Length: 298
Image 1 (cartoon, rainbow, N blue to C red):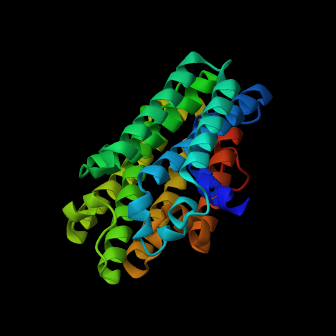
Image 2: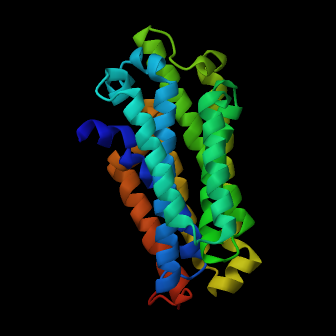
């Protein structure tokens, strides 16, 4: 079963935690009904994402065989046949349809758009400079919107904007890592679009995306509606975790080669893991206590 486990990439499912953002920031985290709907919505995205990964591996099989790391993927290595991979992809899509058939129609539409957008990405759009990264960012924004529609709550425009910037940041970091790796190996990039990028240009995009992430998040924490809903002005203090996380990731980008895969970098770097956990604890505490924390609220 190991080749099939590698094929569906469950480690990448961590990205679908963005679906839960509206649950937390709408103060519905401890509502059993909303929690179950969000969990179902996340599972729907996990199944759909795995179907997309399989399709992407099928279309990229020749390029993956030339990649120093991706050549070990099941399809590139020949441990799973394309026919079985297609059958598994269809199975995931059928399971997704059965799972979400009774969900809010808006969520279902968003999920369908996510699949079609990624299908277009796998077939052609990944070869178009800049648009390839914006397609990845669009997937994260759809996750946030889907999470809001699943539990029928309003999502802040600032959160959507912040999601756009952070996903652009991670997307360009991934492209930079791939470009550096191809230069070091001397084998040439396995992605055609990498021929249109330069490290200096990507570094400029990273700076813009990092600044956009920090500014949009900070503005969200002090927005009048945020203060009104949460009953506290102290959310601004959580910005320090966002800034440190961004700085730490920039350090990894420039000092290591671990950012070719953002998921691996985020889940393997202890400082980033601790920062994310502290940010989550701080946000949940402030949101659900109305900022009334002993020794801080006085």
